[in-house]
Structure formats: structure tokens, C-alpha cells
Image (cartoon, rainbow, N blue to C red):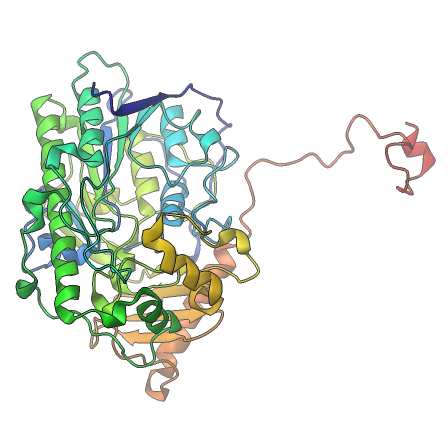
Length: 532
């Protein structure tokens, strides 16, 4: 193995006892999901699972999601052979929070996982721990941003992260602004992502295996900076990029103008923003090439027929839309929340396109059902297996997302130095002007979107007439009934997802020992209790 690769080994840990979950009893989007029933597959027949997760990949960057210029043949082939979910939305527009939701089936407000620095701890559930208990080996190759260090021992069989240079010799092309546009970055097989793929290939090549495996591949592409190996960099030209969503629209949240000013984006030309989008699309095409390499290895090693392959992302990217780059913690535009969800499983129907709303954390229950794993906590993830097999989805379902921080939560804000100099403007802005990252909640149906913030601009969009979210209709009389209905959905969501009780119970009896008086000098407890 290349000596730049670092493989971490972890030991198996104990796991809690199984307890029944909750059945859905009211409105679909507001109640706990069903606990999986016993798998219909016989023992030993559970498929391998591979989760291929590009970082920051918006759904509309793929040809199979309607993009007219991108070249994504491997994503397209996978969607043809399996199921493509046309309306999948994430639970938070920042990586760590979104991934915590994906692994738990929890909205981020359930346990406060709204920060880059609050990850899933040992006392909290996660999908990979469930898979290990169900008899799977779990391999994680790539960045973390989900599990606290101590959670790896009982959740992951083996993990690895490459020490290869992540961006090669690329350089900033717009000094003086935080555009994140960089020059080309080396060779396609010298990236961290490719090295992580090679680690997965090692697993696929193992011939003697008595347990199914789950391989999680979180990529670094197409996350900014906007750069990609040189043989992909010029795949798209700025002049070929269709018009972007314009900057400076009225009644947009305060962070739009603040980002453009603080980042120096208001000094950049339209041509530069189109170049950003062109390189972003090149990053997507590089991710597509990586997917092709992955599928080729599965097929070459004779395990493709018994491997379920999922493609999704943790959130999207502005990539020039609204005159912005990257993402923002309280930004809830579709370009940030709408991500791909493509699934190809053994025995799936194929050629399935599901247009109903789903949520990215539905992946948790879906994988658990495939593995015959029992989920031991109340959650809100729904299995996608029926739709993958051709059943209709829920046309009444809404998707929900959250963002932002409270100004009284300094522990949530990104500290100085986080992410390096590329993020200096972002960190300065959110710490200087907390209004720009105010707590935000979104409810989205197939036709409308409402965004409520603890401070600042509220938003309402008619997505049928205005899919790019350019005309904020908040408080318009002609939309008052729609706004009220969406507010009710959002309220019910919070009523049913906050304050989730754990499954285990504490004894109500006093403990078998009692403190002596010198332990509690001010206690005021009755002496007969203290002396017992």
C-alpha cells in the first residue's frame, strides 16, 4: 500500500439492547418512523452496502437531474439501472450537522447537532453501529465530520484517511477576494479521493469473507476550493455556462449582501462567476469518473450483483448563484438543500424515478432494512425500499431543513483558524454579525417553500412559478393561506421531533447507598435517611 496512506484500526465495542421504536400514527412528516420489521431476506443473504458520498454536490449538477451541459455518464447509468429520487433534501446545509442527521434519522434540533464541532458521541445511536451489531464489517475511507473520536471503536471496523496532498499545486486565482476559485490541481490518481477509493478496492478484492460489508466513501470533491485535476479542469468553458441566478435580489436574507461585501465577491465579474461554475461542474465530472472506477472494481471482483450502491451528498453549493460561493450555515435555498439520491440494490426494479419529497436521512432506515438491522431509538427516517422496488411514494410528504446558530451559543460558531485562510472571511462575518447566521427552519413541499428565522428576513416562494427562488412572497395577502398551512406543518414538525426520550429507563428507587452528612453538609435531608 502507498506509504502516504494511513489506515486506522479500531476494535469492536459493546452495543445496547434492542427496544421497539415508534409507529407512525399521524401526519407523515411529523411522526416517528416505523421500526424495521424482521428482514424478509434469509440469514446470510443480506447484501453488501456501499455509500458513495461526494461532498457539497447539488442535484442539478447531474445530467440525470436535468443539467443540459454536464457529462456524468456513471451517475446517469446508475440512475437508469436503479432508482433516482428527484426531490431529496438535506436536514442542514453544513457537512457535520447533515451527516449526523443521516446516521441517526434525527433532525439536527433533536440533540443540537448544528455545529462542525459537535459530532455523534458514544451514548448516541448511529447507523454504522447498528450495521456492526447486525453482523456487518464497516469500513470508512475518507474524511470524518460525523463521529466523535470515541464513537469509532464500536461503529467502524476499519477506517482510513490518505495523507496525499488534497489540492496539489493549485493556487488562488482571485487574490483579494474569497472566491475560492483555484487553478488545476495535479493528476486524477494522485488525489485523496482516489487513494480512498483504492482502500475500498482492497476490501472488494478479498475473496474469503464470511460477513457482509458496508463501505462508506465520503469524498472531498466537489467541495471548494474550486479546483480539480488538470485533465478535468478545462472540461467546461465559462462561455458555455447558462445564466446564473442573479445577485442583489430584493427581500433576500441579510447574509447575501454581507457575504458579497465581506468576501469581496461584489468586485468579481459575471465571467468569474461563470468560471467558478465551470470548475464546479468539472469537479462533479471528476466525482463521476471516481464512481465509474468504483463500479468497475465491484464488477471485476464479482460482487456487484450482491452490493447495494447508494449515491447522495451532505448538501449543495452556491457555485455562483446569487453572486455567492460555497454555502452558508443559515442558507436554505434549493441549491444548498437539494441533493442527489440514487440507489441500485440487488433485486431492485430499475428505471425508477420517484418525484415525491424525501429527506436525505431516509438513507439510515433504508440501509438498516437491507441489512436486517433493528433500530433501537425513536427516529424520523423512512425506508426507501418500497419505492426502489417500484411502489409509489407519499405525495403529501414535505421536506424539512434547519440552519444557523443562536447568538448565545458561542460554542457553535466556527473559531478563528478553522479551515485555513480560505474561510477567514466566513469566520469573521458570522462572529461579527450574528444576525447573518440566525437560527432558521425550512419546510418545502413540491410546490412551495417557507423559511422562518429567529431574526431577520423570512422567506416564502412559489416554486412552480419561481423555481430559482427570486421573488420572496412572505406576508403577501394572496399567499396568506399557503403561508399559514406551511407554518402549521413546521410547528407540528417541532412538536413531534423535539424532546425525544431515550428508550432505556431509569429506576425511580433511591440508590442502594446514601451519602453521609459530611458529603452533603447543606443538604437538609432528614437524618434517618442520611444515616441509613
